[in-house]
Image 1 (spheres, rainbow, N blue to C red):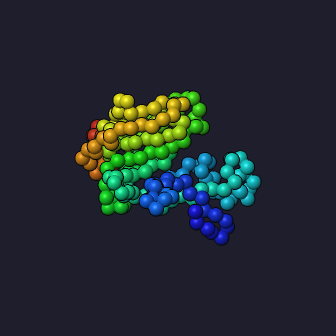
Image 2: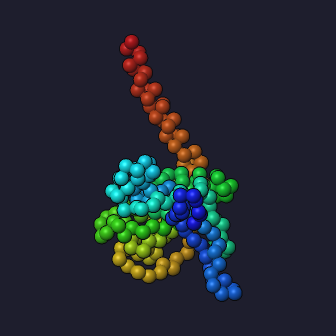
Length: 214
């Protein structure tokens, strides 16, 4: 948490820690959420909306502050990991761009989320499904931990591992080996460029008959 002249900066933060040999806890790494949820973690045009008296429309007396551009975390005894907090798992290329920024490719993805506000609906399952696409795109296993939603271990092909998941409303611990990463995928290397090129080629082919008629 950082101080600023107008008050405090609040971050949605993942904290990695372990028990220190001398007792207590030792912080090993921090990840501040970079992509915040509009109207959930911040109010767009917050200062202006507050002056207009519209902040009362949302249950947020203060806004969260976006963390710095993400990079993989390197923690003792673990391969490099890219944390994704909540709906950051919905964004393609987030992990790949973070790895390029940090100069190291993550070997797995960790998605933590509190899906309690979905209630007993299909929302947590949809969130899990969308997160699995990040594993497929990057060729990386993904571990998803939620207090109320669906938790589980997903391999680099997007498959939920048998016996390594818990449904809604269950409590416990998942003890599972981390699936290995695959080689970087074409999507992780080139992103949407091939799709953009195919759209251009398709558009050009579709326009050719029209041009010939003229």
